[in-house]
Every structure is written in structure tokens, then in C-alpha cells.
Amino acid sequence: MSLTLAALVASITVFVLAIFLGFELISKVPPTLHTPLMSGANAISGITIVGALILSNSAFNDGEPGTAAWLAFAALVMATINVVGGFMVTNKMLEMIAGKRRKKRGD
Image (cartoon, rainbow, N blue to C red; front, side, top):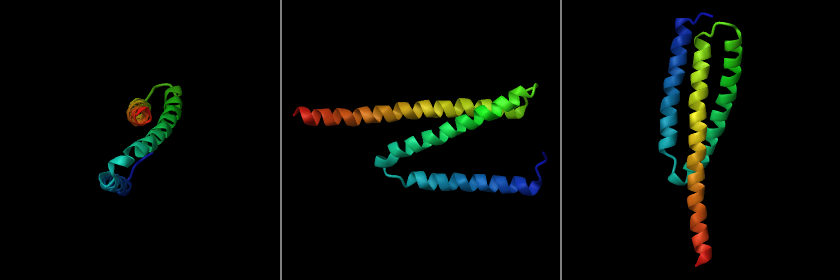
């Protein structure tokens, strides 16, 4: 599989534009929407985990693990950290909201 210069430039262009678009979108989000966005990011990372598992399975079963296998393993580790951290933060925020509701009922 060879990558031409035009395909490489196009891929880098899309990547840079995605960075700018992501930064602009996230910077405009009000703080009340950060928890639902984090849940969406967890879902996307879950899809990344499934893809990394499939890729690493096929790459490691071919015998000698190559670059794709190690990149799949790195993606698996980073996506797992993202999902676990996202759920921990979301759970903490939901506990804070539940604590405020309990205090209002107790008064």
C-alpha cells in the first residue's frame, strides 16, 4: 500500500481542518453542555475501542506484529483511558447534581 504525495497532503489538510473545527466548536460550548458532550465522546471512544480490537486481532494473528498492530494497541489503551476517565468525571458530576437535589428535599 503506497501513499502518494497528493493523498498525504489531502490527509494532513483534513486533519488540520478537523483540529481547527474541533477547537472552535468546543470553545463555544457553554459549561452546562459539557457533560452530555463527554457522554458523546465516550461513545465515540467506545467505537474506537471496538475498531482497535478488530485491527489488533487481525494484525497480531498475521504472525510478526507490525506498525499497524502497535498503533492499534496504542489506540486501544488511549481510548480505554478516555472512556474510563470520562465515565468517572460524568459520575462525579451526576453525584454533585444528586447531592443538590437531596439537600433541597431535606429542607
